[in-house]
Image (cartoon, rainbow, N blue to C red; front, side, top):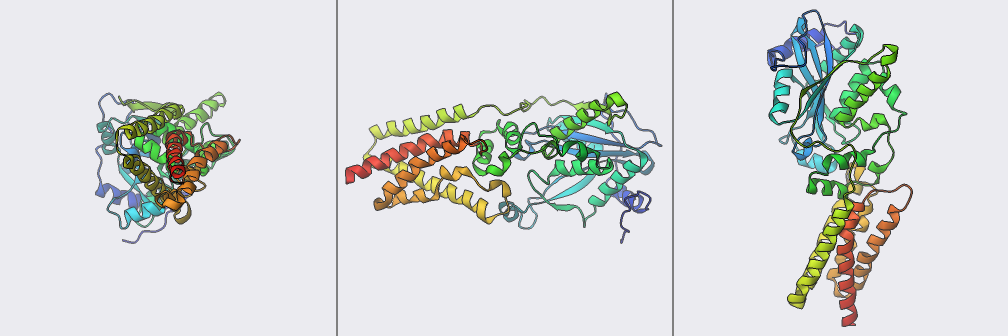
Length: 406
């Protein structure tokens, strides 16, 4: 059924037409949690809320999530609009993921259904009622309805620049006549992309380590508070802070800020912790255990361990280089971890070139440490602490045995 394009003024019939179609597709009985801190809305009122969901246990849930909740009883609207859906069964999903060309899509669904889902998975729910004029509300409503249309709902996902939270941020900024961007684009961020990523993922060892190895220098650059709102919780905090600062003039942005559900899970710290000493102990432990095992095993044992490590390093380095040069993952470029995972150490498998491989194993950690001392650098202390001792141990073994052969 053809539908006319939406007017940003909110005066077109498109919004109400599409709303009626939406209601037929997914009817809602309204938000009715027992002892809910969110009051009911009367038939003549219209409300817009920023809803923030806390981190979950699955790796893609670690950064939290958010949505815009619209309540307009006159047209049967009691739905959350969010931009965080993806589909594993999408055509070429994993190929798109590897190439950095993932497609996410926007969805509207009944608020009761949405909130029940996050309560079921023990994820916190915070709701902030945004103060909007009628014109601003209609502009926001029509924009969100237009975004969930089948021909408009897909978008090219970017971890930091175009994700579920930045899309909610942009929608609110549109409704607020650019007031949000005006006050935050020139305001320094509290934490940069790397620091936010570290603090939100450090509770999951393998996920944290994988990101630390794969992310390059671009995520270490200074960013603005506007950019930092790629994290849903940061957007919620900044909206609250702006409203609080404006309270003295009577021009508040938030008229209600409530916690609908409190999670029992351990919440991320406000800033990343110093994790590199633990990685250093682990790297030293691996190196010492490998050396001790060589005292009780045949000589070929250590040779096999070093050859296997060279293969692991070379393969991992090829993956990092591939992400840098052959994909659209801009955050994986200029990655100093290639000094620690150098594809050329595969030369250790060639007897005549083992000395060259040993030199590469040895100088990689030194160069990586020098980069850390620069005023502006990639944070890779965790990778350096973990891989440095192992690489140096392999270098010592290769050089010693090469000298014996000579």
